[in-house]
Length: 88
Image 1: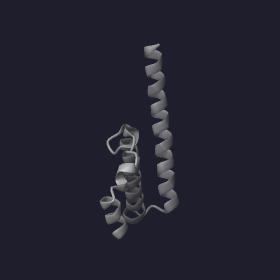
Image 2 (image 1 turned 60 degrees about the vertical axis):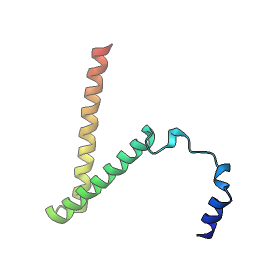
Image 3 (image 1 turned 120 degrees about the vertical axis):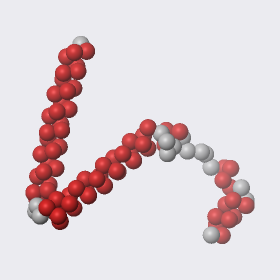
C-alpha cells in the first residue's frame, strides 16, 4: 500500500510509457483474446455438462469435441474454397 501511495505522490507514473493502442483493452487483438477465453470457458462448460449431466465418459466428450473440430474445419475449408473459386 505504501509503495502505491509513494508511486502516486512522487509522480513516478509520469516516467512510465503508456500502453500501445495495439494492446489496449478495446483493440482488435485484445477483443479477439477475450473471445478465445470466452470460447474456452464455453467448451469447459459443455464438457462438464456432457460428463456430469449426460453421463458421457471423459474420453467420449473429447471425441465429441474432436469430431466437432474436424467437421467445422471441413465446413470452413469448403466455404473458403467456394469463396475463392467465386472471387477468382
